[in-house]
Amino acid sequence: VSEPYAVLDWLPDATVVVGGDGRIRHANTAAARLLEADAAALAGRPVSDVLRLADDEGREWWALARPFDADARLLPRMPETDLRLRTPSGRQRPVTVTAARRRGDGGIETLVLSLRRAERRHRLDAARSDLVSTVSHEIRSPLTSVKGFVKTLLAKWERFTDDQKRQMLATVNEDADRVTRLLGELLDVSRIDAGRLQLHRQMVDVAAVARRVAERLDVGDESRVRVRLDDDELPKLYSDPDKLEQIFTNLIENALKYAEGEIVVTAAVDDDSVRFTLADEGPGIAAAHLVNIFGKFFRPAGERRTGTGLGLYITKGIVQAHGGRIWAESTPGEGSRFHFTLPRGGLELAGIDVPSRR
Ligand code: ADP
Image (cartoon, rainbow, N blue to C red; front, side, top):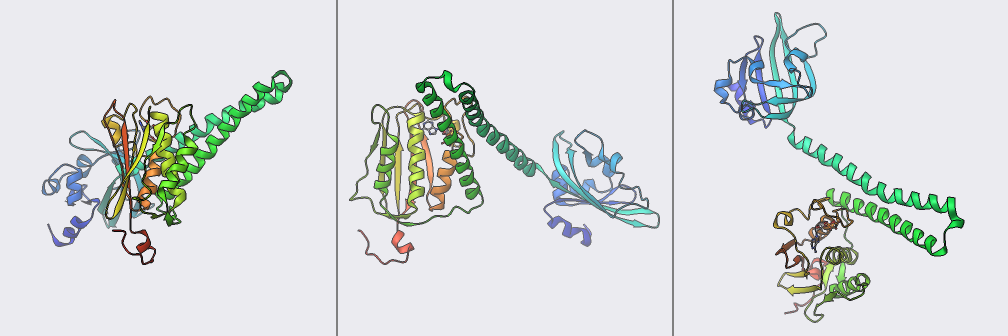
């Protein structure tokens, strides 16, 4: 490889240098990898045979763009274009192509093409449009219900009994809450994604937080949540009390919603962290889903209970912002256990000198 081309091998993007005769002079390492070929074997071959580029409609790019047509309007730099590259193994890869060309006396002398793999971007775009459609759907269904009930009430107020009216208004109230909750969750998600989740830390009695949440949520006919946290054992943790409340709320709410029987909250104190565990007696979570449940908008196919799939994603974001970890275990049929850790040593972090508890 002659010296001026050798540096091209340092570039992460596939780069191909083509002569005025349309034959490849050099393909860098990334290009060879993309084209599933040996760099040396590519040299000398007609570029349009090797780089089989087509637009979204399948039209051949070389015929469309005619980069070797050296007419007066020709721009030295060709605009960035999203294309598909067909590789020798028959795969279609999305690529973003840019090209620069130099004219000599007899027309185009050199064409340099750069191909950036666009799969990641495509995935991001797809994830973004998924998010928009999920969010639109999640907002539209409660709004449709609000609109329907309010419209009916306004039109036929006299015809309903007080009880019926109260029931409709209760539904409207719930649906409005759902939208508010979703918007709150989305804000949390965007803060977590941007790394801007703010914690207002103080020394927190976590047992008290957990008990408060359990009391607020455990309102069914029979009490199901058992908070078994030992106040003497459990150190206070330097953390954000509202955010801890959110963690317990999400995990306990999920257990009440998706599991059955008792939900037991315990903790194990370590030298440098406390591990909290929520164990339920529900149907459990399939192994294939365990890795996904902490993902954004993840809900198992066919999940009928209402929800957005954001709760565990946010919970994980909050735990991680505190410097902790969260994971789940489950034996299908025997319930699930959600564990999360929170680091100890809060007062030292806060710059307050305390004697060790041990
Ligand atoms: P949402 O509850 O809004 O669907 P989450 O992120 O909180 O979102 O939960 C994601 C999925 O994980 C739920 O849809 C549910 O299928 C599953 N899941 C969460 N907690 C439990 C649990 N304790 N037992 C069984 N499945 C659970």
